[in-house]
Length: 95
Image (tube, rainbow, N blue to C red):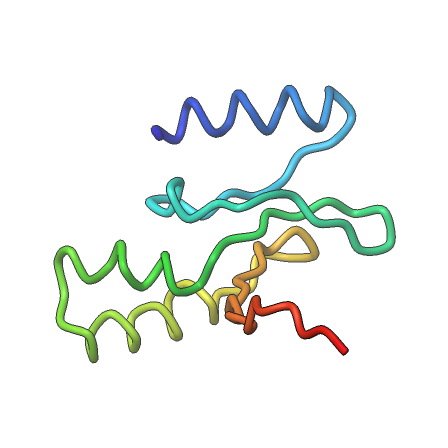
């Protein structure tokens, strides 16, 4: 997905009165919009962000770059959130 496509989708979702800050280059890692105290913010899958960086960097470089330049960048109250996705056991246990 391109940045323009994601921006259009988010604008349609939020309406004219709200906007969020999107992380450049991580459009494919975008998973949704969260809210805290009625303030919307972009949510990204952290692991997928690292995978995107791995296209041009080693694992160590990608982790370091992401932690310092992306996750560590504060851009005000609309700073995006990067979620570490957990994998739970999906088995249903019966009595």
